[in-house]
Structure formats: C-alpha cells, structure tokens
Image 1: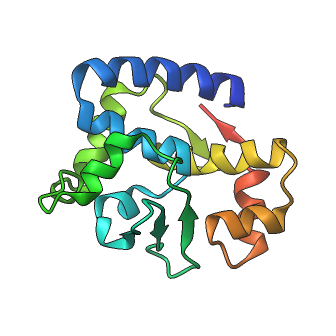
Image 2: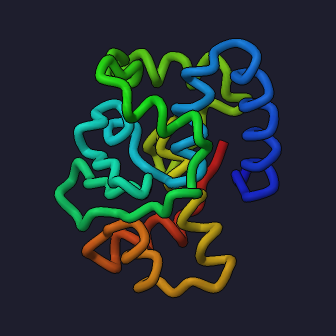
Length: 163
C-alpha cells in the first residue's frame, strides 16, 4: 500500500502520544526529526549543531552539505536545554538503539522506498514532501535542507513510499 501524508500524520500522532508517556528523551529526539527532517546521525552527534546566543541553531549535515538554520522558536524550548547540556543524552545513543526504539513504537515500522527500508528516514522524506505540497520549489527545499543536488531533493519529494 502507498504510504501517504495522511497515514504519516496518523502514525506520528500515535507515535508521539506513546513516546511522550514512555520516554521523554526519545520523544524529543524523534520530534526534532519530525519538525526538521534531520537525519538521525545528525541528531545523535550534536557536534553538528551550533547553538547561537539568540538560541537559533546552525546545524551542519553529516554528508557535508550546506548548514541548515533554525530560528530560535523552531523547536520546543526543552530541546535547547538538551543542546546546552555537556552530557547530552543524544550523544549516548547509537544509531542501532534509535532504530530499535523507532521499530518498537512507530505504528508502521516497515516503510520502503523502492526496495530500501527507510525507518527513521521517513521524517526526512515526509518533511520534503510536505514543503513541496506547501508550494516550495525543488530549489527552495534544497536550500532549506542543505541539499546541494536538485536530483536528491526530487528523489525525496517524488518518491513513492510503500508499506
């Protein structure tokens, strides 16, 4: 079956309701992915993020693309506390643990792009699709996501996801 925006939003509502009760740290982690479309690796390694004095964030990507800018009010205020702590919880998580937790709690954990299982990358796919639906051009989405190649953005925006 096609995994569309309606199914995604329904899954996210369920997912975040459960995580908010079970694990506040994971709730924040996946909420950042949902809001920003960041890769899990970029959140785990918060060295990619630079918290500015005005509480805006410059987030560099793990693939060497352009940095992304997030205004001070983009994230939940509690997330800024996580970034300011020296002993950041996210840095202690492995990608394997994050994917395990995602599979445990996400209502539809087996979503495919072509034959590739995408797991937590669903947030990146759907954020780009959502921006396109809101009228952003491929070029504008590329700027927002720090993607240098328009072809990469097109692959996200026009990909057919199945479950």
